[in-house]
Length: 215
View 1 (cartoon, rainbow, N blue to C red):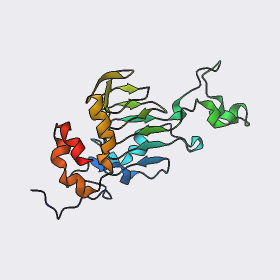
View 2: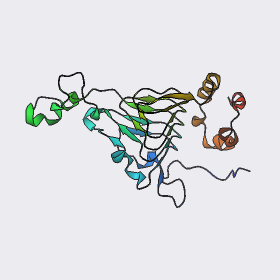
View 3: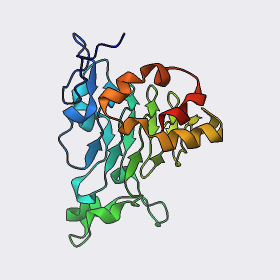
């Protein structure tokens, strides 16, 4: 029987009593160019509260690129996001970042010209990043995807795809195409908490035939 008096609270830092290794990620972020949805969890064996400095790398304010992560994602320890500032220009005759050290070479150079700008890194909802996965700049990862442990994601990942390896490649889809289409229409992550709690048996179960009854 579900306790109807209980209300999930996405505004707290630690979602589990006595556990300081898991946080609701949104509530430990201070940088405006990192945007995280409700209930997304980050786990770290040492300190999950330093995610934006330890796990989001080469994220220079001058570049204005964003890291956007949706709701109900699970981000495992060691997952790292490489942002555009770590993306040297490989088409240039030299990969050396002269604009970063403009005071040594030419003060008219703009620091943002030191790297290729791949755009924002965008993650959907209900995505699982397994241990020490690495996400490269500008990648888009769709709803329901799974990133296998120690994968290097260099290309976009489709909805409900499981990818793995270095570079990451499609292993399989979590469901058939019809079920994926229905889940994307359902968008359960946008439900109010009360409706999610009332349908935990469905969300934890393995019966996609129930989806249409919840539309």
